[in-house]
Length: 244
Image (cartoon, rainbow, N blue to C red; front, top):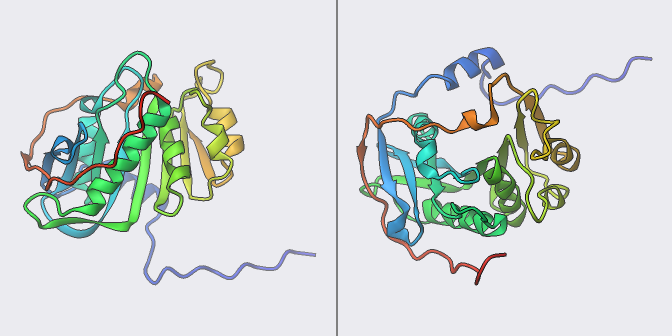
């Protein structure tokens, strides 16, 4: 006996094929990009936005161990050119960072970009269109952020995640938001990686293995072709005392 056919889902408009959509997203978008400084809002970091736009989606991006926000300028600028406000805190850059403090800073970053008008006042982020992304150490921090802000974060991505203390698998087990986990071909066998455990715990996430020379390939520095603007200051949330 054949299983019953599922009722097709209607999106109200045609959806591009995956291959065509991927090809479009890998090309830089047509929009001019502005660069702002999160320090004006009380948090070290950067924010990239398109030149204008209201109720835009926004993401907070967490950096890898011993890296900083500047390593991801190309990625952040690319997202902004596709009309996605992308911001990255430049904290926890030392040799012994706290994954919980980084997670808190990612949450503060989402508060900032969704709580004020950016640029000259003609850019805003919709509070229901927020996501969190991280690379390596920042990927595990992004999982903690998504779990702590389950009512706010609508999607999360862990790019080549690495082991953290406490383990990111613990909050991942309770996540219900759509997620993406990226791994390199040899990443699952590395003692520094928690890809396998994270994939088992995070039921709503999809694991994809990509052909890349190294998990470190996610970060890269690049020049800016746009011009700069700073966000309107806003008081950031109080940081927890001391390392977590």
